[in-house]
Length: 189
Image (cartoon, rainbow, N blue to C red):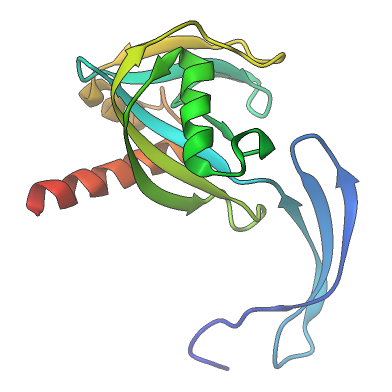
């Protein structure tokens, strides 16, 4: 047995279901250095973006929308899929998602890095951006299946809402953690 886990070997990989949002892959996997193997199922999806956006008054801009997975309304930060319409560039996607979902724009962007969406199942990453001094510059431009209400709150209330469960989307909470680390680094030099 080694001191560190080793990457498994893919013997075969088949797409067993294709959807608009992701593909389901079935992989026959083998653990290196052993006779252990098995079938594993993963989801292949494009990368996503999330935006921690503050308006000119320092309030955080949030979106509230229905989510099919939880069958409930979710309060979260703006975000979406990176696709060909933004040339596959995360920053372009972040700018577009903020504008489309909220009607806000910013000229002050910072890349806060990325997180694995859920490495047990998904192969993609979520890229997190900070947008400061956002200003309302038009109406929402929602996709066909989107019904989004824009909400704003103080940063303190946003942090509290992650503790009391009002904000429960894991990627929004991860984005908050990235932002807090960024703030600490900026503050502590």
